[in-house]
Image (cartoon, helix red, strand yellow):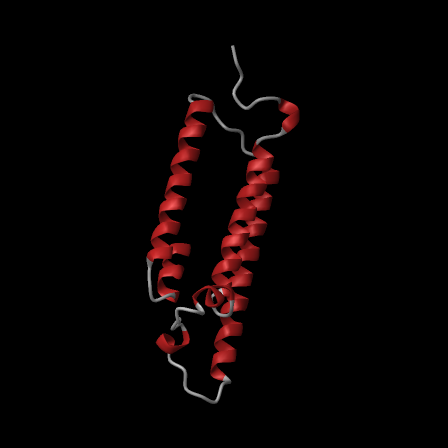
Length: 137
């Protein structure tokens, strides 16, 4: 979803392609890692982790709706006529500045929140008092 948003917000789509390949590579590494650690074990469901995931999902949805409505209302209040293509047109010298300014800052905020959520999940999975992840026989 982030790759589609990135591709639709900018004129060149190289950033969205690279982002998609990085996400896909990360998912492949996580899949191989989890299959090597616990090949035939069942995972236990935890209500605590489920509660965190549900609350983070609700928070993301509320933020997305709020940011979309805020951008939509501010665009309707301007006196000059702005089209979708002219609003997202990027010049060469302002290419990096447009990535972190409105309305593209929403995409950056979502990527930061996604990385923070994965950091929290990895820290919860790898608790230090349990020792190494893969037990050696």
